[in-house]
Image (cartoon, rainbow, N blue to C red; front, side, top):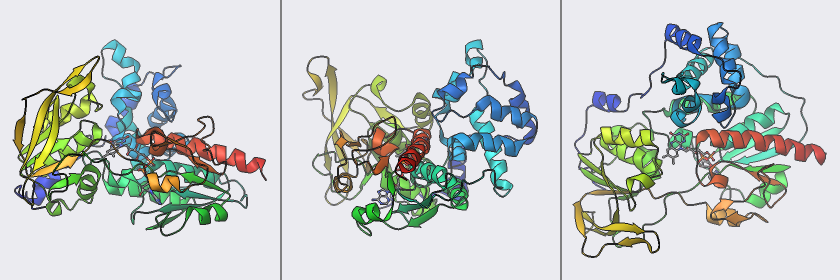
Length: 444
Ligand SMILES: Cc1cc2nc3c(=O)[nH]c(=O)nc-3n(C[C@H](O)[C@H](O)[C@H](O)COP(=O)(O)OP(=O)(O)OC[C@H]3O[C@@H](n4cnc5c(N)ncnc54)[C@H](O)[C@@H]3O)c2cc1C
């Protein structure tokens, strides 16, 4: 597509993509840690999907035991820097802080966790864990996103020989390629990858399992397999004009932005983002911050039905993104390049469901369309795995042990939950590793 938005100066790009939540200083971190009430039933820990001992790690900040604090965090969560920066803390740990009930500001758990993890990486990632004796068994992990990384880290400490196969040249999954740069940069994700490699996990990048190596070969080579392949691109809109130049998939666009070569990302002057989940909001906000003059979110349902978090919605609105609710794109028009998108208004009826309102057409003059209506599964690859069961595009596992229909294959993260958060993938990977250990120990 053509670049029609004005280019910004390097300083403007950096300002637009600057961190939303800058780091705490030593003094402010200690002061914040001392505000913690160390609740005996710690609702914050309960609301964290990885169950980090939050009062425990905060207490260690107060006593200047920052490496001990990092150990407490990493025992529960192997991608703790990413989670510190990108977790929706408002609806998780900080949302559960008892201060909310007292109408006071909750403890800044995310920023405190970041403070500890920044210190850990700045200290050169000292060894905090002891590895179990080698078990003479190997596990192959497909995908180096948070699920695969967490699974790999845990298994290597349990004494297994672990190899992660990653199709992308740069590892880290969506932590490296998806999360908005104003939340975290790729270099943060790569620090975690380096830490996990340092534990002994081998990561082979640029290897797409199913193409470069078959799943049968991996099943033969390893004693167990963990699938952490996440999801694929957005589904088709299935409307005329979808193949015109200027129509993009949200993930490819976001991946380009994440490379931080801001002035090389082609961006339209007027952009329509289709969908209203968190990915759509990210794409819209990123388009605006790259210099698009007008960015619309076109969503077929009402504001109250958006799956995006409230704080993401507010961020996009503050950036000037225009939300068009109850609006359905029906046609994208243009000769070679996108020129406009035709939409109809919709209404939701309890009995009839969503319907288009006759004669309600309106035209949005846009030169870029970003499709963000969810993510598809890696269907063909999944179909190639013997005995795997797939329901609604998700790999079916026994949630007690993350085992799939194929006893040798375990799975976790977005490919089993249809797309949640980093913290859920990190938890799945860790728990699946423990089940793989049980499975392999029983068959020893
Ligand atoms: C745009 C976007 C923004 C997001 N922002 C946030 C956020 O701010 N906060 C948050 O908590 N969550 C966020 N999420 C969700 C979060 O990123 C995911 O829930 C999480 O990354 C899922 O982890 P995963 O390991 O299951 O999969 P992924 O991170 O998707 O990793 C899967 C990996 O598997 C690789 N792979 C796939 N197929 C193969 C194959 N056949 N062979 C080898 N490798 C393969 C892929 O290349 C990829 O690296 C966001 C998601 C998106 C799409």
